[in-house]
Image (cartoon, rainbow, N blue to C red; front, side, top):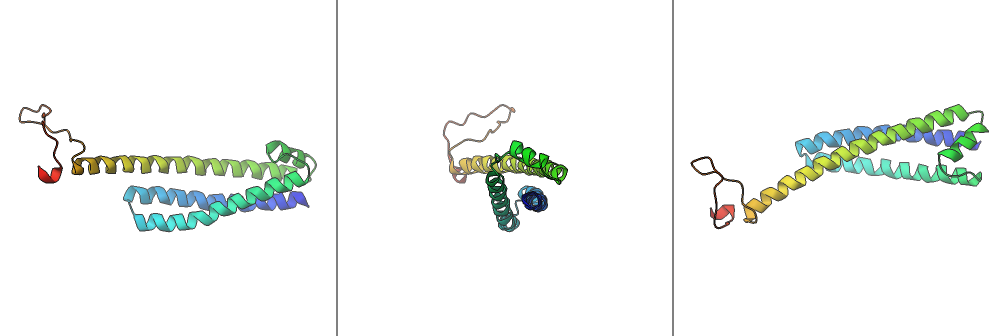
Length: 155
């Protein structure tokens, strides 16, 4: 009975993680286009999926612990050894782990895009505020030496 419940939780989480991966990939596109309304919409759709994955993860852990098994891969393997659905449990668990790893990798890529955009925006704001001088060139093509830093609005 517990193995069937666990199998159902794993199957549900595979579907949920697939949806999450598609949203993360859509988020990458929206980040590239700097489409803030779309990013807000995607975030509102991602949060319930993340919450559901967390809830199911807790349920799986509690289920294994209620059977006096560790709440990790080793505990799952022990349950699978005693279950007629053991092969399905292990394959679905591996499929979910692979799917979640894809989500993590895609999310890291989005994080890099966000950090890059933040850096570029910060640099532009620094130039506009006069905090940093852009690399300018003189008539000979050499880097110009600007004695006084002034905001771009005063240049």
